[in-house]
Amino acid sequence: MSNDRVTVVVATRDRRESLARTLPRHPGPVVLVDNGSADGTAAFVRHTFPHVRVVEAGRNLGAPARNLGVRLAATPYVAFADDDSWWAPGALDRAADVLDAHPRLAVLAARVLVGPEERTDPVSAVMARSPLPGSAGPGVLGFLACGAVVRRRAYLEAGGFDDVIFFFGEEERLAVDLAARGWELAYVADVVAHHHPSPARDPHGRRALAARNAVLTAVLRRPWPVVARTVLRAAAAGAAGRAGLRAAVRRLPRALALRQELPRDVERARVLLGEYDGRNAVSQAVARK
Image 1 (tube, rainbow, N blue to C red):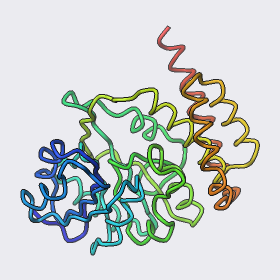
Image 2: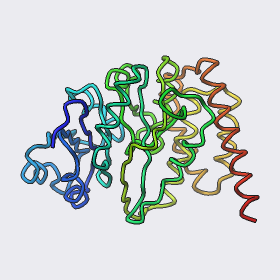
Image 3: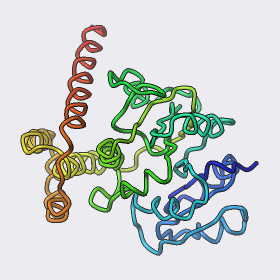
């Protein structure tokens, strides 16, 4: 099955077994970017899935590896997938129809169903409740990469993913930069992606990454008071938060060199989302008592 409007871009590293399960589920065209795998991923995919275009990055580029795939895409839209995710049948046709109908829509954030029990990802649930207006669905200022379809032109205009954040939580900086350029981002619940993640192999490391990247994202785009609050939250988050802060310091010079505060309207929208999410979390906690 082929799609002349959407290319699927998969970034991977040392996950050959996962790819054996998920690549058959992707409609073509498919571009796979191998982030320096040592398990023979590139050769395996070329032999087993000859319709997949394989790009060997030669080293671990992190999330920016997706940029290589987007540049190679010959379609107007690109759907991202992880090596442990895939799109539901018909989802990409539906996504392309929505993007066709909304020419200022840069990112369509899909509903992501997790695991064999198909639980709605908590991030999808939060996006569904967004108070921001949107022409195609609730407006958002973030997304899950494995559940996003992007307008290729807008993505490249905003620079794609960056090597300051590198990996984990890389979506926010791109989302706010797109909004700053006047593009829309929306959650569309009837476009569905499936994600079957493997158990986290290093929970402490992932918490440290989350703390590091929250600080770096704030330095890149948020006002200094927000940066200060983000640093304080990381410092109060235990050993993982402090490890994240130390890691952020090493990347700070490049983040400062690329710092550009958001336009006031986008910053106000970002603050509104943060306040709304906070109130919602409190209300949920009260309801569970």
